[in-house]
Image (cartoon, rainbow over the protein chains, first blue to last red):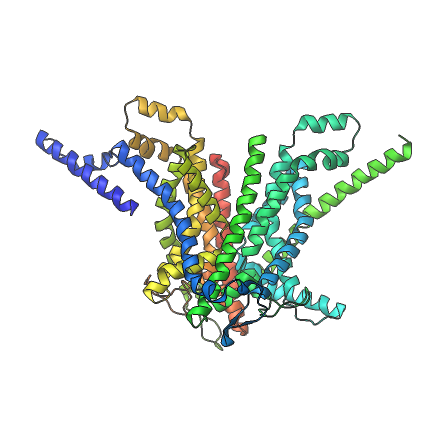
Length: 327
Length: 282
């Protein structure tokens, strides 16, 4: 839409310049048309920019509205009961999303708990102990690589390495050895979200003012005490924001989880049990969904996911932007 | 304070540092394991036939991933054609109108779309394109990927243009060059390398995406260059073949994931070198 208006404007201007040049008897209009390609008036140009900017906002609104409209049949028919219904049986037209809500929350929070054990030390390592040098470069490169690996490859690797490993552990522990399940998904998710929390945490830890740190050191505090009593309290909200943003990622992560969670539509009974998350049930059943209501319920799960991740992301961003204005 | 107190504190300090270093370095383990597995099983199946043949049916040995490579290229091309121009224009808008209320709304939307789960974007592309057209298509997959690419383009353009010194724009305007030409012929060319780096980064982000393609591009075992037909892509192929019960298909999936991983990591590497060289930071 916008591109066409740009083209139109360009054509118009090219025509106009060639016309005027024609009356003056100067040749080489094609070259002139090229040179005058951006001779749109300032007002038009600003309008084009404005339209481009606003169209991003319209895109967001359109995404939200399409999801709402497409899930309306489900919202109308099932109401709030959709959220606490325990049984998901599309054949019998029974749609309760509780198993997926529980599955999503269990995998995400377990993954978050595991990832914090690594992401906060990485943030301290890079932000405080080794801000530069070989050690920092190695860890930074590893983090960037981990962030760059596509999620489907995590899933594939999980399927052939992590699943057998977890199964082995489950046999040792004497629980049903599915291999796939909430624990396996959480482990994969934890690896996937560590980079986000770590890099945000590193930024805020590096922001801690050095005069405060030096003051504490000069009073005889050890490095450990400086980190615990000065740096971490200072960086607390930033680390929290990083964890929020990585939670947003974990909730919506689809492929890796779909491949290792075991796809069971029942309420999970333990962290070793196979389950399904909101994202993975959409991935598994969307193309097979027969009937308008079935499809609509899946879209509604998507809508729910969209709203939750949006809220989490906005809160995380607000905390981060407050930090950067304070610093 | 007593002597023992000091010793304890120093000990705690040392232990803490050792713990931090240990935990920070332990992130190398999963990366090493993933790269090792993909390389070990992937390299074994890759040869010229693998890159140029179509996938073989179940039970037959051999076969390749040519259609997935072409499909990935088509999807990236469609997504880039849609997202790059709009993303650059919206990025200029944000850089030029930093403080206005609409710029705030645009920036918020960019961040929200950036954080939207990819599967949700797949649903949206399904509603917008697949439902009205009545069939899965490369076009719908490209549109889904374009929505994912757009926020990266907007942000990288904005960040690049913010780095341009105001004096450059002022000098151009003072010479009597019109505002549109100043932006398009002075500011944009100066920021070209940064925007290019952003584009590479954005392509790296969408190249490995599977979830938005599951019910848009859908996948197909044939070579098809019609953008109105379903098309295969590397990540889709990895997913479909990895979750199949056939060892021959697993071999194809290992090879495909190696090619995909190499492609994505090279793109990221190029973008990283670009960021360092042109000192842009997104």
